[in-house]
Length: 116
Length: 114
Image (cartoon, rainbow over all chains, first blue to last red; front, side, top):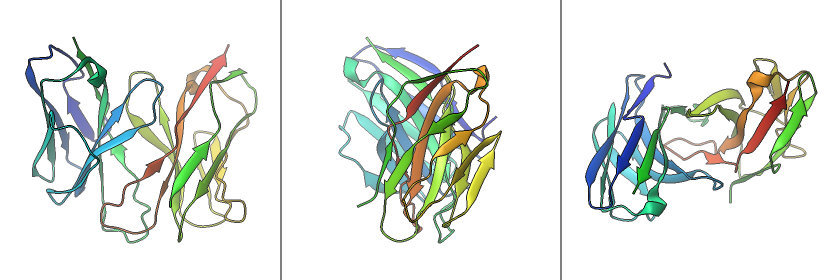
């Protein structure tokens, strides 16, 4: 149990489907993140939310739509994806009130997404 | 700008061998430094961290010392086990708040032979 729970663990979807990934944390953290991890590529930061407000969108295609209804929950809505979007999607959370940046992130186990 | 460079993998060692995974960084100010580990099929877990120069982070037999003079944070372990097989990520936090993102290295895959 890492403190950050992601569901589902595995997802197979067609290119015309709509699905959502869910992330939940009860660590009292106020920032949440979506990362994409593809084979043989560095971790890619997709979105950052701080106190429910989106503070970063790293040029992510609009077929990925994040939602953060409160500081404990984060969603990633998916529609009309492409096969190259197949990857491990990782959610993370952190406490951002420390001024020295020493908080680190707590990661979930990820959702392994396959687009067919 | 801020960046992290870590040694290319994969690294393959025999059980009980000595491990070093090199990591160097560039940063303005006074970053915090981290090592994360990712076991197969899992997310990243914080392995150890150091928040100021000359600090040594340690956990599970792994150690890393924050060297400001060489801008390095090399990961070491005296005697590796098969269970240490994983991908290791060096990372830095720039040292200011407001959800500043952590910068991750590209990861080093470690495989330990029995």
